[in-house]
Image (cartoon, rainbow, N blue to C red):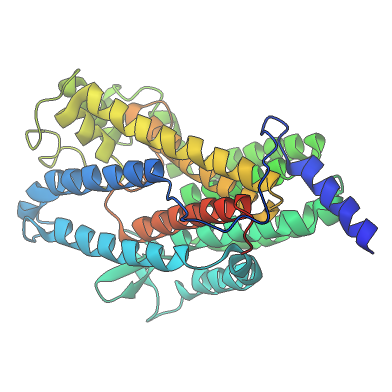
Length: 409
């Protein structure tokens, strides 16, 4: 039995590990000293939160005289700060939960997430906004269930991959079970509808499977099938197809005044900002020209007020977080914390792809799709999920350092 466990451990390390990570040794007799925090990640995250808070206030202050909202100038800023406080508390709690507990709870959290996806359609429980059923009202906060589901999918996919590591070359045992549950999730999420959130869940789960050593032929078959599925869903709905193709020529009159209205004004905002911006608070596009400027298109307001330099700073902060997440994950895998390593690298995939999509949409590189900019855009549920993810990432880093000092978790 012991030899079998050693063989399985070596096979997992071979499939998941990265030979570019050097061998880490430690003295098992050495007493554990103070564990340092990754202040680089904390600095990047808190910088994004501060910039996001300032820009949410700047982008939403003019909404007070809009008939759609008819509220005070600080309404969205106060709600954002309350959400930020709740997110920090949530992050503090998540950091104190050991990764072995997260792994044990992964299937339960996934099932809970599915139940919440069903709950949004229950009259009196879910809330419908702008024709979409995505929220559960919790007093001052509307919980967007798909944000909770991102965490659930992240943990479940990592746990599934470690459990099925010996079957990664089998479609029946290594891929089909995860595919079936993701089809169920897709049915519920697309019924809301929220194609962007479902794409992110697929990206996280498939990315973790790829890192876990799934057969390259199975992986590419999944990619091709996914593209065909997304293309079919886009073409099946006329409004999705119109929105998709509008970004190819946003300046055509019918597009600029219709489906590409947001994109055209987003590009105008970037153009007005030039290198150094027009100054904090002096943007014109937020004056009821660019719809929902404080949410999905907040980067356009950053570009207008802080210019190209401000946008580059934002991208550099995200680059640092993604880079460190990948490094922490590789280190965890080398230390045989396979679940933790896949979770950390799944977080890197999450933040990297979501940031790329948000920036791509705002700049016209990608078709318009509703995904927020992590830590920056207005949205309490997104803040909660992203802060929880960073807290889990820091927990992985903490347990790595404890292991390297010879301690046990």
